[in-house]
Length: 584
Image (cartoon, rainbow, N blue to C red; front, side, top):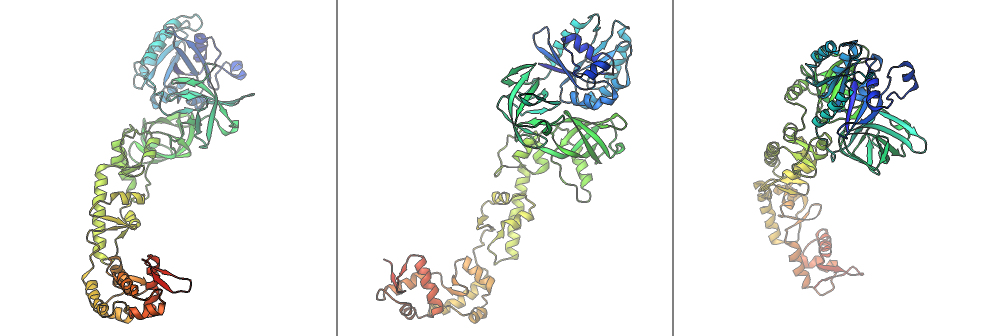
């Protein structure tokens, strides 16, 4: 199906032309027919000589209804610019053309109507000169008379040729159906209409409402007034939604493939047609069928940050326009450059951001996005319209290869510096490294750990970290002399302090396996449990705590936790009368 929107000044015969081509009445409201003027969007369709269908979105031409016109033109891929031969180029002709140019509509026709009332050559020449500097430059032109029928067959043939030139839609892509009409049908419920540009719709599909994020299900589909089970692009479609109240959805909303779009209230854009510094602080952004007030923060000569009054499902490369509703003119054409813009909190951030935006063209590019961001989630890029073909480094995180290597080098340096500054520490906490490297997720730190670095109990350990510093080794040598004489007598606090074993030194020795901590500062050599078991095996079985203490030549302070350790390891078993036996 070829879907085209009409465009042109009020009373230049747009609706009359659609009526003559289709035999259908595009003006839906009695007020429109009474006044002979289109106020809201109208819809009609007909078959072309090739057998394909052309559907028209007929838009109002009066300056008071330009927002309605933009809602109809926004989602449509082609346009028919209508100029009356007896009136010529007029103010709304210029504004409609500026809107089409801003939206990047590059497919269409120029139709000079009322050729029976005046020579179309003059109006045709002026219109061609106006179109020459726009996206519609060089489109085919056809003079017609809807009253006499002259030129209508030529126009139908031209529409067929236009359909042949249209780009091939993506039937398996995500759906973003901008709603241009919403109403209730008795017995069916809420129905919305729109132009399906990509993706396919099926009865029973679940979609997402852009305005609220809630899930909705398709109850029924109509295409060209007939019910169907599936609609493929490009097509005018009416969608009957199950369980959605009429007041929950309106023009400017959108039906989306769930999880494929990011609703954003802040975007960085390029503005064409006017210097950004000359724009007012507030304007209205028109994109798809939506019209949203925005605040503008200039960044570069032709780039700006837009803060939207409500989130919209925008993609990289989307075309939109800024309009001043008070002065009623198109202020500038917009190309979306970034739907995930970074904050501009630091001094100089705006100037740096402007320099980055100057290099962007709005085309989705995975390599470029990762090069600029360093790290990005797969879902964020997909929802921005970027095709992802790279394997994540961990989880759903993608990384620019050069940035990832640099982060790995920084991690190794940070761990080495920490080890030098904290020789008794068991390694650097992962969370500390995450903050130091300014990484958004702990899993990224863990994924960066490569030999000879090791990840141990939530810390990154440097190579050789298990070796004890010389002062600690010297202190252990001193207490080893004590253990040689009495292997089960733990040094008291005074003795530990005297040899230089404070809390940090003891912790390092315990982590290195040079000391066994029974409890608190009750410390024994690491082989003490096996040595004690050999002594206890020689006792009459079962044995008491007192017998064990005497056999081990130690104190109750050591004997109790030592026997409990042997119990936990399954080397001894405690009996109901508190005696113990060695387990064979």
